[in-house]
Length: 191
Image (cartoon, rainbow, N blue to C red; front, side, top):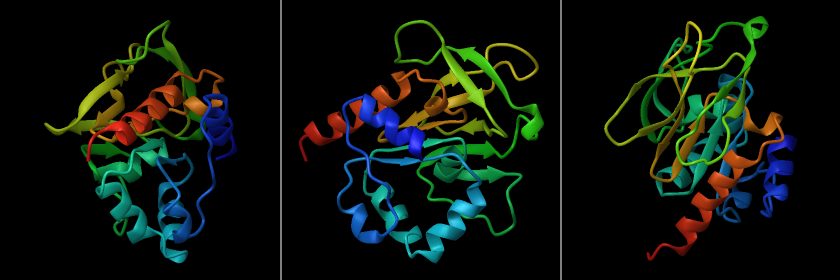
């Protein structure tokens, strides 16, 4: 979370940690960080945040999920636990830990549709990938080399953005800038 907060600050946006439902009302956008998706869900239930988060996301709160956050924004999960729940919102099927175990973590340059400049350095840590994309979602980034070439690792559906990699770990602010722009556009849109 610290890295996402620092990236937002570097982009000129103010970030806060959300631990209580009342803090949700203060948000113009939400980032769901990496970590362990089942643990994040358990904590959200424990602190009575799961349904309020799900509702805010469904109501149009701009939300960005990285790694585990991608899993939590998926409508469908492969290789999850039997009781695994998600906030949902993106019409996609995500495979948990698709790239392998912690020891299989890697970095790779990728191109990201809608982000100018050289390829992004993507950091993959026990990362998911998108197996299937529904008609409402759009793939924005794919692995370009190796045995996973062509796998979708960046996706957007309306107010929701997800990456299977960790842009907060690289110092490259372009994905966070992309998300901040999404939040600003949502605020400026006529209601």
